[in-house]
Image (cartoon, rainbow over all chains, first blue to last red; front, side, top):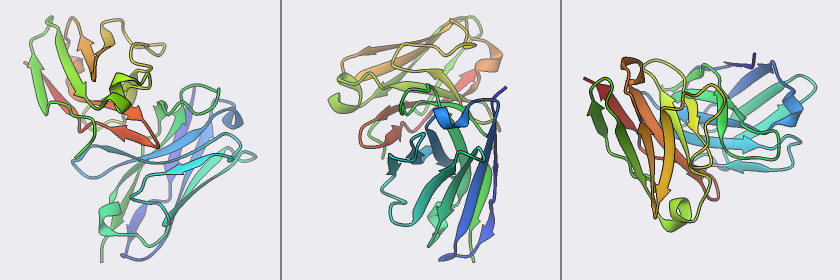
Length: 122
Length: 108
């Protein structure tokens, strides 16, 4: 069974940094692109970032470009999101998600983790 | 404001069929096969329902179907069940993934 477990969320002051992690199991991690998607409280879904299986291709939403860095460690089946210069509008539940197919990056997300909550507030 | 427009809410009675629309530009919907749909039940993580406009991942019931006409993609749920009450999001891709604003389905 595919499992994705996010960690690293918490309360952080504006301007500070936080690093999220996602530990994967139940599939061959380095065969799949991976993604981060967030959801502000009571709001819809917002794609944040994607990374190919070998980290050669990385994309970011304009809202986080230059502040967030996605990375992965295929030896540890882990995905990370380094978030710097955090803003109140970054407050959200952050989900990691596996790409649906193991052939390139389809940008279809299946499955999703349970999410980790990031709250940016003074 | 998302480039994909969904109705804020739809409703239906058990056993009925409902359709949720997702209207975008030609780039995001009309000439794209990258449209997908997600279901998010209250308090739960999203799950993929439809990908590549019409395909269902394994395990998704056949009463969920996707289609497209022009710049509008649609999700149809046949034989509505109480457990279908959820938020539904369409999604597409062009220089990044975009989601529609979401549609709340109420089963009466």
